[in-house]
Each structure stands twice: as structure tokens, then as C-alpha cells.
Image 1: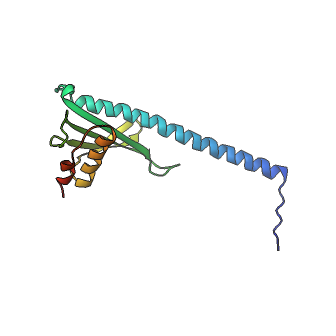
Image 2: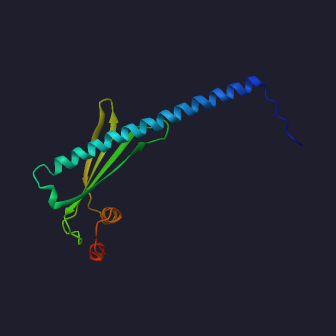
Image 3: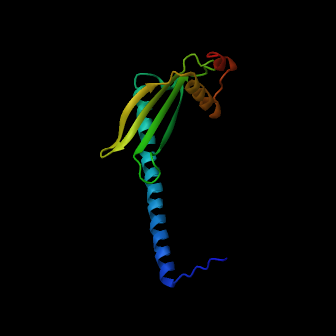
Length: 148
């Protein structure tokens, strides 16, 4: 038994308008997420400047990692995380490794820091080491063995 659907031009027009409206809304959400992510990347650079304000930056290697999004893709609150990794220049054993995380929510006045943490769990430290390696910095095998 076959089901026979009949659609009128009016049904097709309503469907087209609904799809166009949904597509426009999704496009706006995507644009909004990208714009807010860009603001958070600017904030990451400010954090680097704060961290090294009394230091000679030429003695250090550092990386920042920025993640942001919505708690629920279409309707959720905006969140962001800035991870900052630093070490002395050429320290492949990672003895001077420092990792920091700053958690943010987007409010009426822009990004607001909600929490701050030092990266001290081995799995997160390994992620920092891997991030250094992925960006072309040397990390010795001994650094990974430290927490085993």
C-alpha cells in the first residue's frame, strides 16, 4: 500500500519560507559565535601581556589555546576557555612548564571571567606538552614519563 502525498504550491511556499528563516537564524548564530570567539582571542593576548609584564618575553616560549561555543548550539549560553602554556626558551624537559586556564561566560558587558585554574592534572599537562609539540616546539620523552 503506497502513501500518496499531495502538496500544493502554498505548502511548498510555506516550507521554503520556514527553511529560509531557519537557515538565516543558523547563519546568524554561526556569525555570532565567530565574532565572540574573536573577542576572546583578543582577551587571550591581554592575558599574555599581563603574565609577561615584568619579564623579558625573549626568554620564554608560550602558546594560547582558545575554545568557545554555546552550551546548546542554537539557544544556550556562550562559554569560553583560554588555556595559556609557557616555558623557558629551549626547555625540552618541560621543567619550567606552567599551564593556566581561564573560564569565561558572555554577559551583557561582554566576556566575563568566571573561574581561574592552574593546570596541574597529568592528563591536562600532557595536553599542554602535546600542544607544544604540535606547534613545532621540542618536548623530550622524559617530560612525558614524569607523571607515570
